[in-house]
Image 1 (cartoon, rainbow, N blue to C red):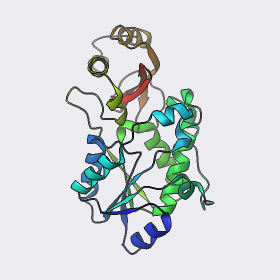
Image 2 (cartoon, helix red, strand yellow):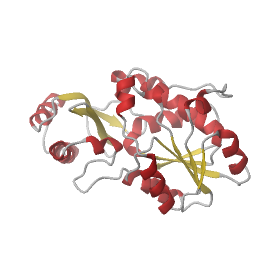
Image 3 (cartoon, helix red, strand yellow):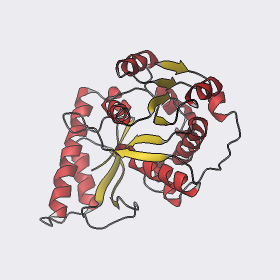
Length: 271
């Protein structure tokens, strides 16, 4: 595996290839990332993973500094997976140039997580716009756990006619149902159990609502999740996966989107 810290040496290497399959990450690699990499390696292009903790998508410096980082361990994982390239840029390498494409930030960016994290999605789209311009990947592999940012990056690529294709990959879950996430590393055993109970309850409720065996309001769902041990819920909403618009009923194309805190650790999911 070749490791690059600056875009000039990276581009000199990768532009010799016919194309690149790209997995953007912030490190703290887990089962979800590993699944993306394995899927990427089934395609004909070489695989490039980036590790960059983007400060512009965090609410504050404290949250940014708390984000789990272990580059040494991440490199070991990537070598075992026989990844072709790793890109670990510094801030100046990402933000020290003027982009050709202006970012496109869909109005959805102010909903769900965007309602509670003011500049989060703007930061996500900015960094992805820049990474895409640096790498020019044929394929970008992203997980459906972060469905909202997946939706917004697809909109960016479509509106700006960028020659990259998003490959959306299924959510990878732990044995207890909790979506694989770097933030899980900071949960206590009890908090991890609570997160599992939340997942199991949402699965149960979705099934019952879809088959119309019960009617339950979002306030009642929230009350039940509070009783499981969750004190702070940002939102629980039914959203259509095609356009992320609100729905009052559960159908085959509707997921329940949720964001909540266990202590100061924010977890999101869509089920």
